[in-house]
Amino acid sequence: MNLSELIRAHKGDSTWEQLSERGGGYPGAKRWQQYGLNKPAVKNFPDPPTITALAKVLGVSEEVVIRAAAETLGLPMRDEGGLFVTMMRSLRGTEHLTDGEVSAFVSLVRVAVERAAAARVAEEAAAAAAEREVEAGRVARRAARKRT
Image (tube, rainbow, N blue to C red; front, side, top):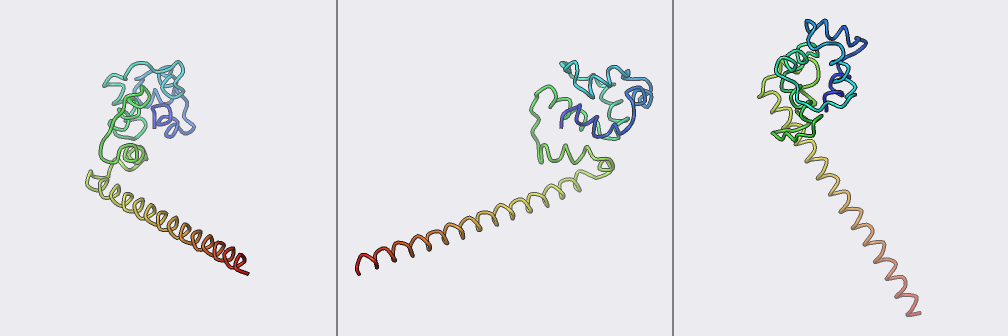
């Protein structure tokens, strides 16, 4: 999730001016609009006070803002859970989850994904076996016709 997506996900009906006011006037409304629309394109990483203000106003952690800013600038950030954790942490209320709880949730999702992948592989194998049976039946019928 890039910075403009993060801001739009949490902006609601607020104006850029209202967001700025909630942050004590920092950053200004024009900067909020630039970050929120990515127009003109954001070319520099936000400074620490801006990151703190954005996080406070949006109700997310500073880490979420940093990751969103990095994505906006095309800077890869890899870690346990990667983008999924970043997206999850961008949801209101998840800032209260401990790292252990986030890790447990990521593990749960991994297990679900692995099970879904295993089920898909099993389904594909069953479909391939059925296809082979159908083809074997065709071959047997052709062979029987040739004998008669």
